Length: 248
Image (cartoon, rainbow, N blue to C red; front, side, top):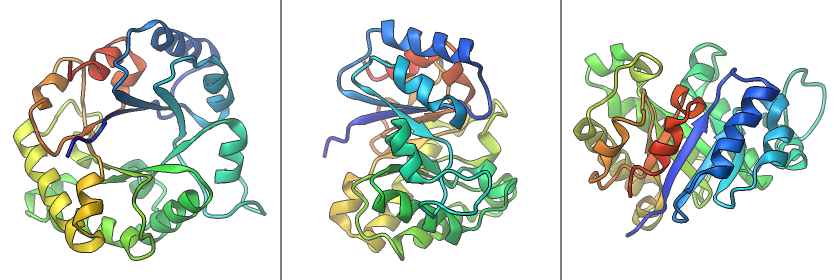
């Protein structure tokens, strides 16, 4: 089946009012394909700015993180209800930097994912293995474990996009080959077929993330199970437009 091409831009802890306004202005002026879904994730304090400046109909705004409660004594956290109030429609969950630096468990990521979905926020669910795990040949086992934590408590995956991001390829300049990415994405979809059913698994978009840039993005064009990209550093640069247009 045809799955809508999806490009996410994770700005991480980068940007200022001036620089992010420029990034959004560049997107607003760009001739973006109507059949590509674009989601950009600025740092939380800048979500209202990005929402207000964005005029592209195909571009939505995401948070980089969310909590699993609506309100309360949770200093520094942000709820999906607050994200909706700010105009965001998506959130990331499970990014490797949250898993490794903040020590978020698979179960906590799953809880946040479910609560965001139940609250009306769509989710880019990040999964992926470390270099040591890849060398040990347990890539799909790691991805399966991270996915299973979610599928145990979430039955409807309509509003989930899965982002496969091998940890060893994030910000390192290293990238899985298109063939490697396709093989892993195929395995991920096969696993989802067993856990959430063939119909849902076929519809779930699986993104590749890890040093994607304007030059290498077109190399993934003919890979059947690579449904788009989650872009880090390159989303802060003009080449982000090239990535969005890489399927043309």
